[in-house]
Image 1 (cartoon, helix red, strand yellow):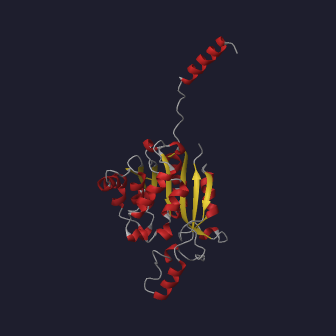
Image 2 (image 1 turned 90 degrees about the horizontal axis):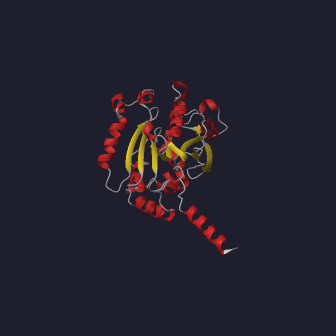
Image 3 (image 1 turned 90 degrees about the vertical axis):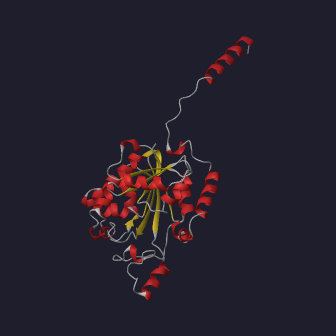
Length: 299
């Protein structure tokens, strides 16, 4: 090639390299603050090691490390915790996600709570739940904790749309399901999850699993159990992709009859508190057999 041609080519390449490509839209997989896998694993180990002995005693049943790794949760992400508790999962996430991350606590709607019968809480406690929860979280969080937010399903703020990397729905889908015919709560909740997620975002579901052979009528959630096939179908009907399934929360010893409730087993042991022999039988079974599903919002 002639020297003049080389010079022209060089100028062309320099001009091309000086033009910055437009940044791609942020997705759950491109969260800028997400830590490297090795750093994330080390931080998760550190956070779990600092938990109370009571919390650690639940690790063989709750599998926190395996859950976070399976769902791809990393420091710097925004994670929604459905039906949050002081430990599972908000307490762990506040420390793990760090100041560049965010935990958004999510509750059932105030209206849905009124349909829990004798277990319905005082409506006053749910009327201002997001604001009250946000105030409590901010009062408790340290300088190195994640940012916080709060919402109720059925009324997701527009400014939260497309902000979440991962949504955790652990042991909570049965109530959405059992009340679906009385207010479309399950349909609305799954739509809200889709609204909250970034493109490519993940919903992680841990749910008490009913045997597939049981009649549909007995597996709508009244006993706490749902069929895995039915739950997968509900998310897929809403446009989610099933990415993966895990047996990390499986327990083959739990073989419920059509009348058995999840609360007969640990940690609740609701049916055997005054019956030592039955209690021992329930403890020998252990906690429920649970499906663990990973869904993705299409990019």
